[in-house]
Image (cartoon, rainbow, N blue to C red; front, side):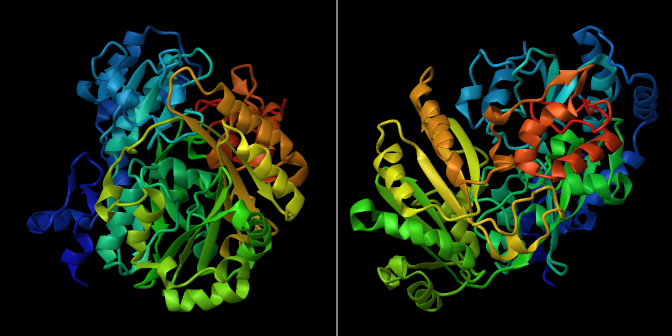
Length: 568
């Protein structure tokens, strides 16, 4: 194997000890020795090589400070310093750099306002020991931790709170190392990396022969995405991102660094779709990479209502989940147009006969001019960034446009009748404040995984997922746009899943419910109202896993998993 080819432009760290760089050809000779260390080995090495002072702090916090004290804020900061966290990595609200850092990766501007409950501190760790210190000092001094990798949480829960409380954000953006093992088709990736950085590193290291099945937006952080499920154009061929996680390294509420074996299978199961932030701070993930052909084909075809959009969407519901697993066709509904977007793992010449045979309503409109052949890595900016974007653009960590948004989701197991689609187009999508409906097809690989194999339960029998999206760009506005989402969601109730009405955890929506805290612990029964929508019967097992690793509910937010022991 050509080591230069494998390692070019791969984000790497020396044992996750804070030495981060983008490897270029001129650096290879000096860089290759430390690339032999996997991220798992690196993070475990940190745990084994902590200074005596930090070990003492961790032990004393684990065993003597289960009940948070009410010490002054200075005590938390002093604890971090004493535990080896450099002062420049800790940002207090009074720091000139605090607000720019906080806002740097807030994707939903609804939560950038000064009225939002903000963290008292932001900690920007450059190695695992800094994360351990944040956790054990937080436990000792009554400061809760929220974890941010990319800032895409739909309700801003990775960096804000709905309730007044003293909390710190651990911002993982400096922990974004990636090591690709081309020979074994695996990679270790730290949680602060973006999907774009991961995709780019994998393509570069594998000569465009490997990819990773995850989301369409390249600025999404790996940590939150993988821990909530994660799907994109490869979901029908290779399943969820979480389905392809092989190992992980996590800091638990006692400050321990745990890999898969050490955390146990129940917790490892839980963080692959149940939200890692409920169980600890996931530092890194080992993922399975998947083969992609040298040529893939994409298309984007708009069809107006006058040109047959309603018939095409009605037919799509039954066709898309049953298409060959090499073909992903989704639909974006906006105004009076249905735009069909697709990725096919093959050439245009192979795609056209499939479309004309299996989906005539769209296929008979198509010819070669509708197809765009490209490499898989070129399809990432095509779907995620719009016209004119390049492969190098997916390395940008922030979105070009930041908006105020409101989103929620549904699942469909029985096709919706044509008459309902007529009402949706003529009524809901015709309103001046209307947003977008995004329909993503399921079936094939994602349906072949048992419902209990991961916390993500939306498997066999699901035709597609609906995402309701609305956005605006003026501060203080949005009332009409948010009402449109909520009212359309209410209108759709008879046509989607029920008992429970299912929702996708990565499309988080606090309208579905919030935790009820009793005795300083989130209520298991109170969490059912939203938990069973996201996880169905898997909610109880998630709560049991929470009981084993964080029974006192230190890692908590408005929709974190409650411990099962708090079943009241």
